[in-house]
Amino acid sequence: MRSALLILCAGVLLAQDSGGFKKLWNGKNLDDFIVDTPGLWSVNNGEIVGVSPGLKYNDFLRTKKHYRNFILKVKFRMTDPTGKANSGIQFRSKPMPGSHEVIGYQADIGQQYWGCLYDESRRRKVLVQASADSLAGLRKDGWNEYVITARGDHITLELNGRKTVDYTETDPTVEDTGFIALQLHGGPPLEMQFRDLLIKELR
Image 1 (cartoon, rainbow, N blue to C red):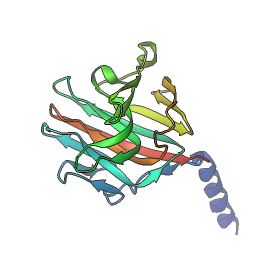
Image 2 (image 1 turned 90 degrees about the vertical axis):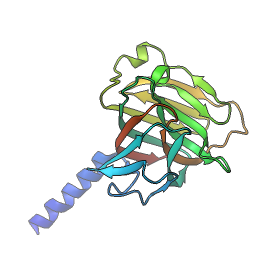
Image 3 (image 1 turned 45 degrees about the horizontal axis):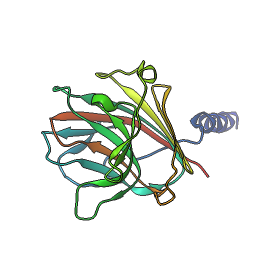
């Protein structure tokens, strides 16, 4: 009886420690995703690995599930031998018919776009440029963490605990739901590693 009670208490504490966050995927394979280009994406030791030999188009690993209001945590690392590569994390996104492209918000990674909020294939521009101060903790050749919060028309991005974006959408025609996707940008070869993908859905 005592052992069972201890196990129950440990389970309760673990649930409390999670803060309502759940794993975005199963951690073993890519069954929870739509894979556009087989061979670019794989799973290794609980990490999602994307390897680009140098693509002529952007490629995206998309969740099958769609999300509206949420807090998303993602740790990532870029291996970029050229210094010119780019990647990102899409959210509230949808497919572009007849194309590898997707439409939606992106937490940008790489070049001069670290920490920025970009509007992929829609307005095709940086919506908010991250300040130099907000990028003080950036590790271009190491692990970083994005925390993406989307609630209603309000979006914030945090990179390694520093807020880089605080954005309010003013266009009522912009969709507020969609899939989450990891990007391999067209252009120079690169490798992206993603781990600890956690999401907490909000009302």
